[in-house]
Length: 303
Ligand SMILES: C[S@@+](CC[C@H](N)C(=O)[O-])C[C@H]1O[C@@H](n2cnc3c(N)ncnc32)[C@H](O)[C@@H]1O
Image 1 (spheres, protein in one colour):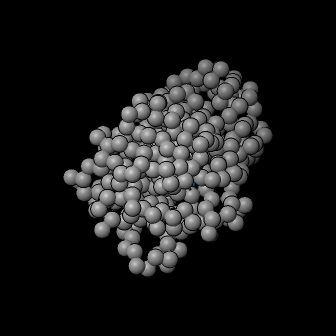
Image 2 (cartoon, rainbow, N blue to C red; image 1 turned 135 degrees about the vertical axis):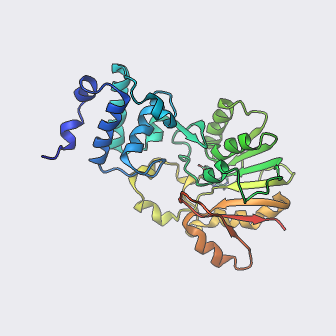
Image 3 (cartoon, rainbow, N blue to C red; image 1 turned 120 degrees about the horizontal axis):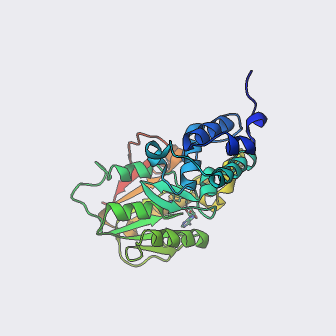
């Protein structure tokens, strides 16, 4: 006999029968796998999704799993977790908007639905210290994170390049408030500056050594076909006009005035790679190798 969701999604089961983190994660995995959920905000399967729910609620990063899976949960913790599991399944709220925590390149960030849930494959480049993308002796002093959202890329770059100063730019004041919070969380007030600006509009007059951007690039007409989970994210973080490429076009047309000679632009364009190649036949884009997938990213050197 196959167990049905309504037979196991019961508070008394998690309160009376499940004790350890492992027990609860196994139970959530079963519930998730019997539900109509979309994974795409930090995990791609019910088990990882369950771990990403339980550990952050306990204030622990998911990578601590092997150290804590045997630990017992208090009844209060199990009650809280139960309520969140219900919200995840019934309302399809992404896990990160329930826990308000994510670890990007290993650094904790506060996240709520004022900002996109960080998932950019640019994290892989940062984790690899931009190996074979930025020359090893190249230490960018001034960095621009354009379309910063939660500030995830700016903050991870601040750790990677400890002598740099980073401007974290977003058009959304809501996002900038979250960036400010995350900057404080990491004590980076002297090194990362949040700026509310429409792309380059309000930027200081100096030129940057490195510009990194993960702009919105979804075509408005494609939004209605996205899984419900994406509709909790700010639309301004997802959608761009002109079939999804307007912001990318603006970045390409303006970046060179804000990048020093031989400076580097790194920009994520997702599924718009072909549109960009077709639109700019005379620009040499170096398409970066991303092992974990998740989007196309180009590099341009300012010659
Ligand atoms: C795809 S999200 C990326 C957020 C973050 N960098 C990340 O990787 O998770 C794009 C961000 O661009 C911002 N944005 C949209 N249009 C913008 C514009 N014209 N100028 C600056 N930021 C913009 C949105 O508010 C959103 O936070």
